[in-house]
Image 1 (tube, rainbow, N blue to C red):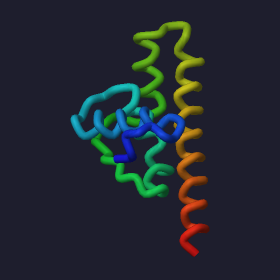
Image 2: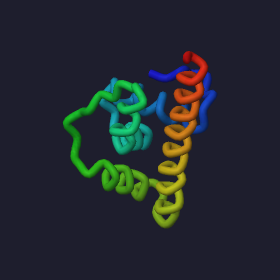
Image 3: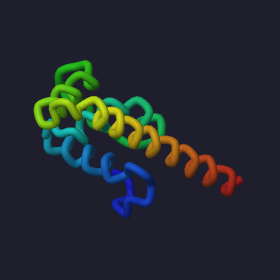
Image 4: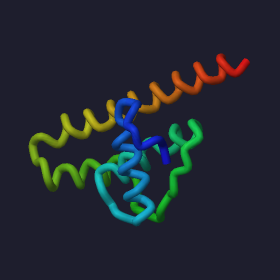
Length: 102
């Protein structure tokens, strides 16, 4: 799991998603982490991959649509942008750390 301090944008989504996955709970954050799992794994985050229906993107969208109706599309895109911001910030942080370690 990542640092719980929430120091990176969207980090709270990743932390919650990983916690939900550990409990096998199909939540917005869990689906979001699964969508981003290839990139997160490359960044060194261990993501448990459950045997849940795919594509994960459709599962998240359907879950949001049940709750949000007409607002689904903008909320879905906002979640994806926050996850991308998290991954980009973590990549930047890792790059800076590797340059300092040289």
